[in-house]
Amino acid sequence: MATLYLRQLLSGRDFAKGDATAEGMQNFVYLVGDRDTNECMVVDPAWDIAGIVLAAERDDMKITGALVTHYHPDHVGGSMFGFDIEGLAELVGRCPCKAHVHTREAEGVRAITGLGKGDLVEHSSGDKVRVGGIEIELLHTPGHTPGSQCFRVAGLTHGEEEALLAGDTLFLQGCGRVDLPGGNAEEMYRTLSQRLAELPGETVLLPGHAYGGERASLSHVRRTNPTLQLTTLQSFLRRMGG
Image 1: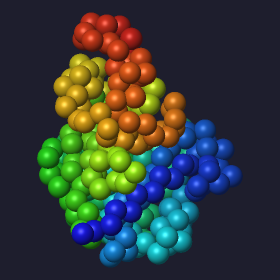
Image 2 (image 1 turned 90 degrees about the horizontal axis):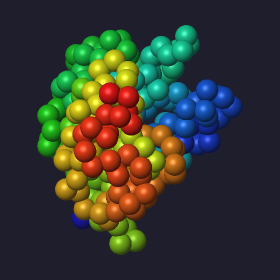
Image 3 (image 1 turned 120 degrees about the vertical axis):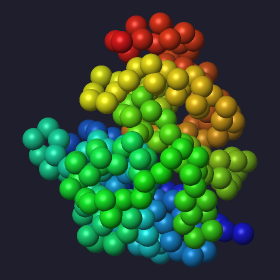
Image 4 (image 1 turned 30 degrees about the vertical axis):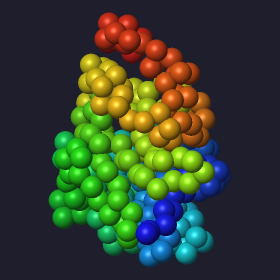
């Protein structure tokens, strides 16, 4: 049986040290893989590719692929706020590998990063990818962007059955913005109230930013996240400015 490797890295603390913008953005990058084969994938590589690769190497892990939650530059690299951010393009150049994206996000990822079609593997919701013996399920969770996706990983320890790497879909406090290009408040409401509603409460939420904390069970988040207390579309739209 494969042994899960899962590491959470915070920008400005664990990588991109000394980068005030990266520290302020509070991005999480994740390394997920198989300790038995020493292979891992990196979720949303951005800001400091050398630092992310070094973190994997210090754990004797080799990066063999990338998983993309959505196309925004603070998650995949590109231009933002008038400056350039390292990301997928630099990762692929350093560790030749494929980036796994939802099919509705592929065009945005290519436009932002400059990667070609051959650099991406396009997926639909429910697809599974493997790294070593570890299986990762891809869940389409639109709202923040049309092709936003979360990654469901089983095999945690300490009584935790699985984790959800949620990108900017859901934070411990709040959810992703819906007022950026491609955002859709009604889709976000459906994602939160329907698509993610059936996941077990013991699932550990691992968000894309440290907004309100680093990790918590979904049952805790459902009790304490104000966004998830909005039980009608109308109340959700009022809160989100829709």
